[in-house]
Length: 171
Image 1: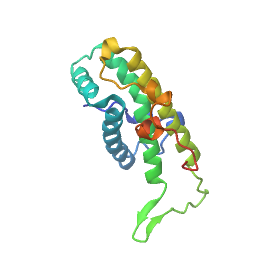
Image 2 (image 1 turned 135 degrees about the vertical axis):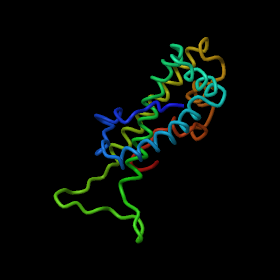
Image 3 (image 1 turned 90 degrees about the vertical axis):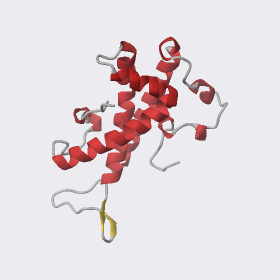
């Protein structure tokens, strides 16, 4: 499947420095491939994911699949941003994890931006889930109901991580 998120999507609050360099672009493209598959699996489930992949494989895809693509895009972008920043905040050396020393700047903690963008991805995941649930005529009844989770029928821990908000304290 083609990537839903493109390098050009990492702007404004999702901005990643030096995305125009080969090293950063290659790393981001690998992460997009990894996390797109992971997010789609968690967000859509196996049956709806199979229908989605078949639907977007047709050129041009039907409107229902194009609409769903637009709903999942901010989820994937937020998750990729979070993991890219988390993985690149330090560098692995022969001594373990280290922070590079900047000559004319002071290193800042990226937690606030990471948490903010992750939580926006969670909000987008719930919006996507609501969209799918409210359009069962287009997407079938393959989708599990998040409303049961919200009403307390299930523990929050049962939800996939893309439906769980985080904070800087990790609690």
